[in-house]
Image (cartoon, rainbow over all chains, first blue to last red; front, side, top):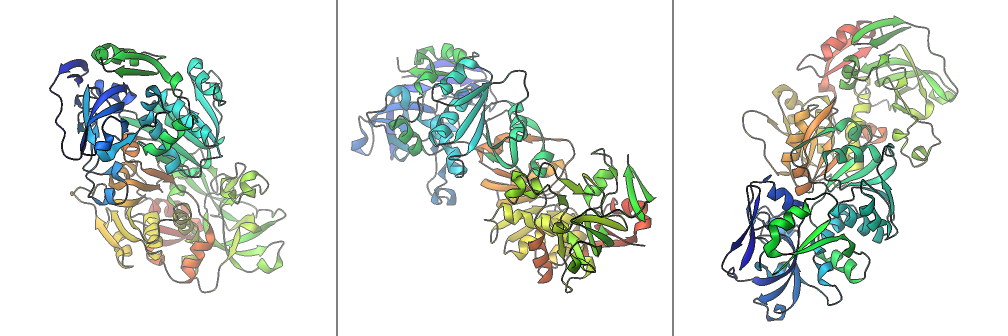
Length: 319
Length: 319
């Protein structure tokens, strides 16, 4: 089978035998994968990653212990947890210290004709959700995670900083939950996707950003400057949600965080159920986020395309 | 009257007329003041401060609109709020954007024979609380603030980093609320104060600090390294409370905060009521924290003493 291979900054194509399916696992044929900024960071060699990347996917089950899964279209939670430790027992398997992570930590990723995942990680996609939408379930779940972590958010005023893929998903998810969202970004065409959903948007120009103006601010800029801007924009006693993974250390002035008693909430992956529910009832529209659709065998070009400025989601489909 | 004066790093003594008492304010004669690390930072000129410092005090009311206050021993909340803005209306006057702050922001401080504060800021001290304990109400309230911000704390395991004045108060306050506290510090004699109250303590030596080991960590180190250590010691999905005011920017690796979904809570001043209640029922013992008691006119020497390593609270009494 064809699969993508990353090592030391290079993207290549490998021909490998189809993976074997351990007990409790499903063998899945890739239908569509999505290139995420994390994949681009793995490519840049930030985490010493070598292997097959890809953690956003929709596929079809070709073999499984549970026969009713066979032939179904599925998405899959990316953390492979031990199922036995105290974290797993407390329902926090996404933080299992023994976990491997699909396409990120010691489990081959989804940018491959076939992949394996534990059956308990899989969610069957209802027929009403098209493939191009289903492939967004994983990042959409990461956006929904904010609501699990900060249950006081729905109905509130919130600033979303950043108009990249994750920022656009976060803005739509919060808007769908009754938040009064104001999204700040640098790219008018990207912000137009949010504006079309009725979200207030503002292109960051030469004017100063508002200070101490929002009870909640989500930093989805992906840049070290985002955290500083978020701390300055949030009201005293307010909450900043950190959705930007930034490589290396960020200089932070902790004095305003302490003086204004601000809470900073780190936020990563989320449960898939709320994301599937949002897609099923059409409360978010992810399709305008697709910039390009390329074949798995074109992965080197697809990765280069995904890294270009102005490009949103690049999808990979089986050849 | 005698008062302390700080400017550009120098501590001096001034003779000024007794301050006039605006309507709604009490005129207070100083009984005891406490030198706080913030005062030492003001002295170092970090905030361009010039004037009379001092925000930890106990005094006697000599004039007031409310005649029943006259002659009473009082402590006073340090934020002078406008009382009209939305923050004040919501009971968050400590964050009133128009506020002045006793001895810190545009209101002369308590290191003076006489000071003024709004009557609504005052709390009468019960006779059962000795003066040397009452002077700790303000920093003790700052320690209690953690419980208002993180109501899930009581009964939990918590690491307290730092064995300075604030770290010692935080450890006792949390211990008094049923937390299983483990305090980490560099000074065995200081940690002995906590140990005498039944708190588990550990002198930081050459061994590595435990990682991902506590659901809650309070950083009261006052050092830029404290935040990094706290983030490393807290469990995934855990909470770090920031009690260290550090001057300037701190390099923070936000990746573990995001990957482990850690919450960071900035924490400053607190309500006085819980602090008074703890002192009244003897649940904390602040007197071992007193290193020295000097006269107001000895303020230059007292500030120098307070800055020496190994010294805890230096108190100032009227001459």
